[in-house]
Image (tube, helix red, strand yellow):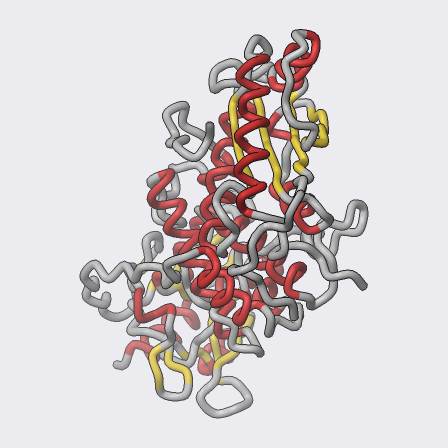
Length: 277
Length: 150
């Protein structure tokens, strides 16, 4: 049996046994080559489930919205499971109300090309799961892609300005991100208003700096925001920098360890402070 | 969309506006000590007193730059001396991320300065303001993050 058939069988069984109230996974999207999240409560509907390179969404972001349904089974690849770990650490989900079905991932493809985020994936297999379906993917070697930055502040500013100037502030990146669950996002806050709502360069840059700041130590570099962006802004550039800062300054990688506290909710008296006078 | 002006020299007679977020317990008292000791330092800073450096949200710093500041100074108690025990440790992590992201985005180093100043360091505070003012003067007016007039 193929992995997809094994997955459907297993999910059908879980629903039929009443072990879970809902299965959260992907099904084929309305356009060919795309997928969409699906929320299955009837055993016979598990035939819709797919799990392949079309599944571009990070499924962890949908769990909190259906957690009132009861115990959830969720299909999770490496990045999905890391996001689930983040959400568990931030008390957005409860471990005993989740049944995580792990799958090895071979990368997301958009129009036949490997997604940019997947090209630097370090964790194709789940870090946390209750069972694995199908074979695990061989662990890739170290391919930490350095953040691409210009040599001087002005060249960096010009490069990034060209990216963020295209932003139309639709917040698709926020909607796609499993970490963005705040009831009132900073961009929507009005009392006080934290960032202007214009699409001028200054407001856009502040939005993207603050989005990246909130991602430090939390972004699992799944690339869901990049793939959701209608303006093709290279959001992974900001995400990789945020992840690099958390890694190099605080020694943490998001979602790899359930025991570690979130990077910005903790401190070490010996944190580096060479930038402070 | 406004371009940045890397080649343009600082305007002649340019006096920078620097917003200083000072913690009530150490740096604000340090500034006070500099004052009552009659130590001279540039009148470039606009002080905002905050209860703790942990109160300073990265938004405050960016908004100051958006709304007319040429530089920002954030100062609190030395590590271990926080009135609220750990406020400055938590703030330090946030500032570290903001500092690195600003550098990544191409905001000139020195535009935003972080410092620890205790209540007894009046001379150190005055010297800090002298140095920050000189640094921002050489950088010239803040054009990158400044909001365009409507």
